[in-house]
Length: 63
Image (cartoon, rainbow, N blue to C red):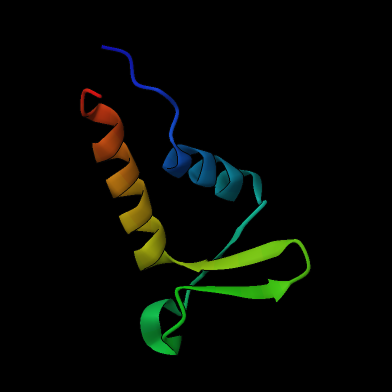
């Protein structure tokens, strides 16, 4: 069974390359996703981790 590349891995790759910045303040602001500056998104760690987890679990399931 092959695992297709999923959105979570793409986001993780973009974060690693510096295409997305991770918000260290976490959930304190109450915003999971906010526009920080043109062309750049700030993601809080909890939402990013949940997205990666759900994408990975979904990609391992047989269609």
